[in-house]
Image (cartoon, rainbow, N blue to C red):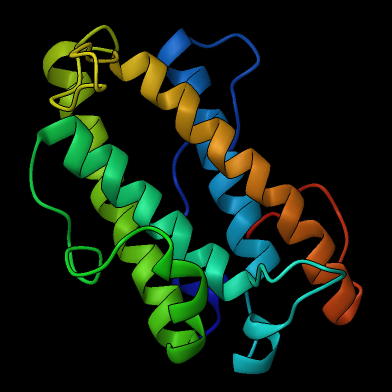
Length: 184
């Protein structure tokens, strides 16, 4: 099963032209998610382990890292609950290298399951208290960010890594483009 067929398409595929602030943030996040999985999709283990230039970043490492980002922000920080496996047993830095030990199916499933949990948690939190609510997590100074600020952080995180994925994927098989094709 390819990553694209395993990915449930969200209602919002990109930011609406004249939507609410929340729909704009969620649309932007969904566009970054969709582009990330498109850039990493359909590859075998060698493709997910490929690097480019002087960087050791791989598409598999990116998938695992982005799954952790989803888990950290929309479960640990938003809800104040423990991280999901495998993130409950090792630190942030291990994602990049440990992805080489995972099969493509495991990496695609890990990312997909984290996104599904995130969507559920985010929808519930927004319905209950909107984007102004504070996260359960706090910075070292004791200040809790709003859900709005967290959405901005996650969109920024994805956007940064979509740029990495562009270069890596093009070096593997020449795939280029800004947006994933429409589901058909």
